[in-house]
Length: 329
Image 1 (cartoon, one colour):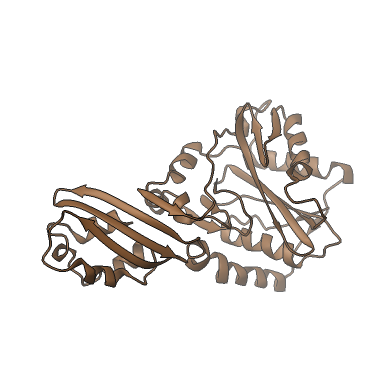
Image 2 (spheres, one colour):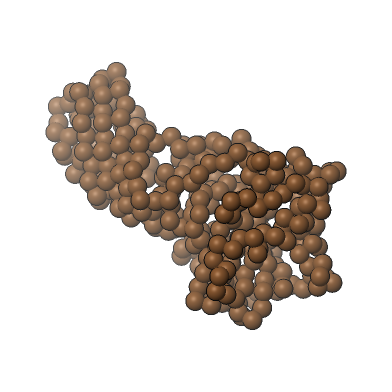
């Protein structure tokens, strides 16, 4: 097994691009492990509706990255207190959902550190009945990876807030995350250790039988390809938000000027139709506003841009443009 050198990169978009490049391009006759730490970010499962998983206002205010990965499973929160691992190897029949095969060495190392870790259910590692690791997998025709999180000393209050969805009502075909009680590994450790020390212990444990660590380093041309993948895919709204399954949103709020009930149909992140109902007053026909908002991206910036030069109070008397954008998104 070889340890992939990610140059201590903390950008989740680049780390996910590196992981995808590795599983698609590295030789299948060798096994690899990748360890990385990301800046504060929410990593969305491939089949999820991004808006259904994040507290958008909180994420935006805190500058938290939102990035979709190519593996399935639920949304997870990453920060500097979370260590991510990824085992990359040839695909073998029966490997799908065999999480124990990949998490077993991790669980053993955690046990050696005094952490009462165990693989529970399909893909979670628990300690003391609380989740310290979530895992997911991705397959190509002949390669695969099984990756997971290790909540070492993460800001758990951020986990709760960032994944606390505020939207009124969403109906979608996306896979919804199942929230679990979480804990940090530091709560269970025998003695004190920092993140660097913890990472070293994981590496030492994984390579103990080999007698030492052997590294794989990408060359300059490979890094160029990884950066291009990050830029053209993992940096884009189309991948991170637009790839969400079709969904419907119902937003209802009673303002001093009356109640507004908005029904929005979204496909590939774009508004297909929008209707407004309620007991509000206005001098203009809301059908004109509905037409103005149809065909745009369903995100805050696109809505605000579409309303540039539009006086919302003509449709909802007494309501400001800012209040309307806050309501709709």
